[in-house]
Image 1 (cartoon, one colour):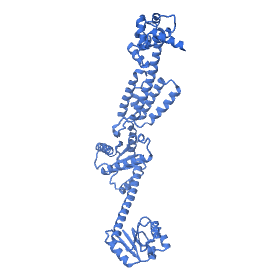
Image 2 (tube, rainbow, N blue to C red):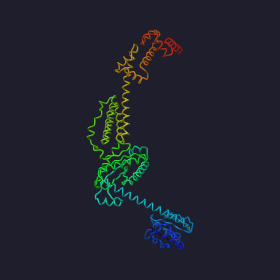
Image 3 (cartoon, rainbow, N blue to C red):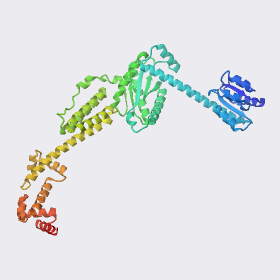
Image 4 (cartoon, rainbow, N blue to C red):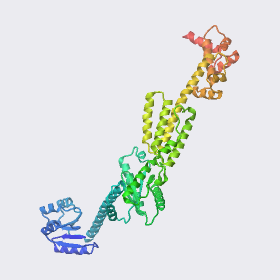
Length: 521
């Protein structure tokens, strides 16, 4: 550390010199000055780490020249006068402290040590920041394939403190990040990414890995040990990936999707490993809870033949109300196979869109509604980040479509049954007879009728007959027996009991009451 003391009083210069040499500070060069002219001349020659200045000796021009001193120096002022204007000027010139004479040596020594330590920390942070930038730039060049000279890579690696070059690229992303970002601010996203990078950086330092944050993903480079074989490398990077997955999950609660490319001994080809890891990243659509995937795990990665060999989904002609569940079983079976073989998720999304189109054609009769639904759900499918996010929603929508269609069919069946009942209520008709008329089994029709009409077939027929009987009772020339026969009852006494159970009065009482009401009106 280079120290400069500019002080008019020899007594104070000696006291400061004694204090500084006994402070424990590592002083390399110590300079004493007694006038403002000497001070201004000296600071024009070079920089000092620490300067203790008697500000009372500074003139107007000296203050202006002093303001050009950079932030690299620690400035301590001393004065005999408690003057507000002097304190303001010291703040403007970026003095760290201003002491009033006589100076308390203990306070000054304590302040100096605190300021020096703070300066060291700031310098270390600046150095680390510069090193981090240099490392990130170096990593970006390697993974982008911009390396033109091997010597350049080696020189930069040595400057960064790496004695060997990486051979494998690992990428890590937060699973379902965009899904989690819904209704969250960019500040929240930045905070989460910063937290995650801090955890990954700590893990990488403890496992001799190189890490860098590139956009929203974390890039990790693996350096093998001397003599390490390819199979060993694969097992090691997979193990490290699983350790990182567990570490981040336990520390933050976030799941990572970790993709690992193949090994490339030539650093000029390392970008191939990065591209392989990037290809694997799209498979996180299948793994919303996080996973470690190595390129060697998917020999059929993105092979179109796997899709071509898959069973074709049902067409609109084959889609029926009773095989909708089979359709979802088929989709889930395809999902399991494609997930295992590493088929590009876009094919699965397109399959869902195809099924969506077929079902809309079958269940949506309105062309306008069909088009609106197709746009809405196909966009959701294409933008989905995970199968767990989109498949349940699409399945629910498909079931709603089929249930809606089934509901319409049910109403048509019951309407046909009601038409038959209204034409034949005056004779003795049965549930079996009506069921046969609408081509349904008695058991199925009975449940269907109650579901749609909210009453049983017998209850509806009874209420219909009593309603018609009331209309006939208002005609004076018809007897109760005649009316009973006309609404399907052969026994007048049974008819009367049923009528009273529903209306509260016998047929004659009900007729008398209605006639009285009409007379009053």
